Length: 224
Image 1 (cartoon, rainbow, N blue to C red):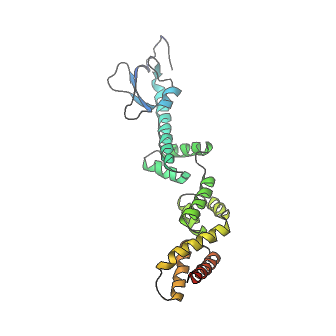
Image 2: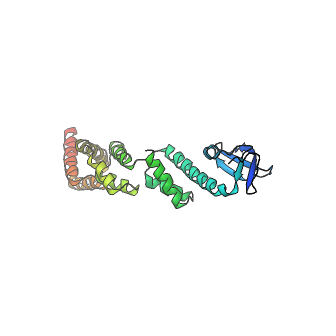
Image 3: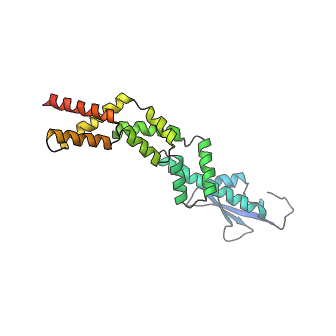
């Protein structure tokens, strides 16, 4: 885009490049000694299109530069959002929609993140399932529903919960039931019914619930 000594009528010469003090990764581009910047671009776009002082830029190149900057801006927003905690592709897309990014740009950014393995719904699902079981004592049915709500596909959610350790799930159910039991009021039979419903609401399968209730009751009798 540097046209040397011969200037084209449909081009402008960059006379100044200044960093945006509020957004340190962006730069203002000034042309023909204008007082106001004609462009504000990400530093990656600055380098890619050689938007440096003394270089000339064709007016016909501006749409491409602006489009590339929009993609880079969306990509930067997505990375910052991912920096807080892991996300699914759908969560990234929803976030960028809230930021009023164009749908076609969102798709391209999401595809780029997947290609770079920055987002991986399959891996996310497995890690999420393990974490919810271990730290939140949730059962596989509840975990699967949460994964679907986060935009993970049915097949990826099913695969993730299929890899959960069944013995560990039972142990988690017993722990959850043991913590809940002292706070359940009523006669023993009614308390058992309420405990059963509690564990079912936490997403444990019927077989796990029955065994967990049995173990909780055995533990309580032993304590007594």
